[in-house]
Image 1 (cartoon, rainbow, N blue to C red):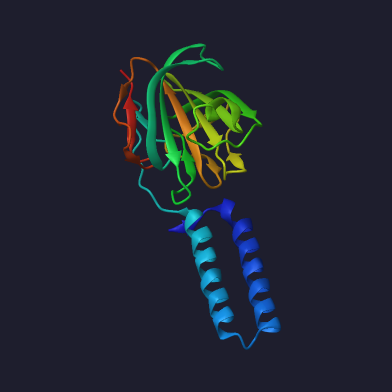
Image 2 (image 1 turned 90 degrees about the vertical axis):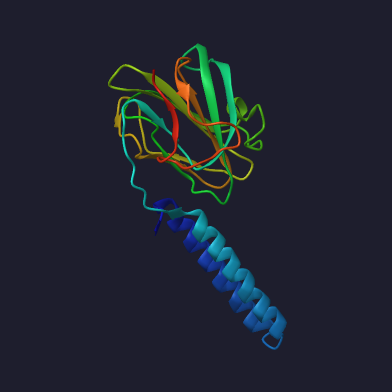
Length: 219
């Protein structure tokens, strides 16, 4: 397992904060053994927490043009038919994955194809499971058309803790199923909009893994 590139700056800042905190404790209260050890313990826990958040586990991803892979690690919190009003302007099946702070936060392409639509929207930071987070929070919207003419849309949504969305795709560019398309720092959510005739292979409450779990299938 490696550390994702998005974590380098955060880890450097945390290391600096830990160094300064420990130096201050040793300088001002060197004889307070309890304070020194408490600082050691808190420093260790903080560094490990940030380290695990930016972990980048190796995954062997099997591609299949008929499958729609899960774009993120987390828990399925929504499966419902909705009106997608930003791009498709029609009815779609929405599947939403909530990513907690302990999940891997790498986002992966559900399908291979060409990016037909991309938009970034600044916005609020409601909790990721809030019903209006899909339309009010900071987010990106990405649509991809497969080589077979099937088209899906997926959306990165910032949560109450997530204050930075990162994406690596642009309109007109080709994407590979299972490859990284972005990263969201700390708790967040990813929505996927499937055709109405797609078969959904997950249910609410399922724990899923990005690039490994089959979200659905094209019919």
